[in-house]
Amino acid sequence: MLTTDEYERLEAAAAVVARHSQFDGRPRVVQSCVREVEERYESGGLSLGQRARLIAILLGEALPD
Image: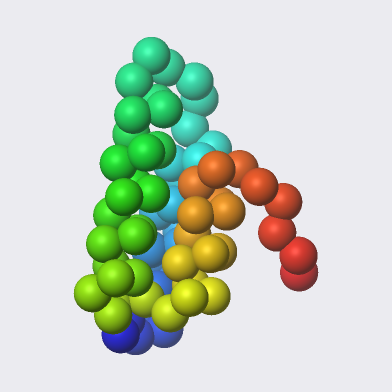
């Protein structure tokens, strides 16, 4: 499992990817990031809540406070 600092850095990186301006390869990059999140979850590196939050950030979904 990630430390709090590691998770916060991962969340910040996901937000940068999600906010990046549109370019031709962007959907492929986002999908690659989602796959990496899924792999980390499946290997026990992320909790279900962390997985859900990171994927929501990457897909640009509104998150509750």
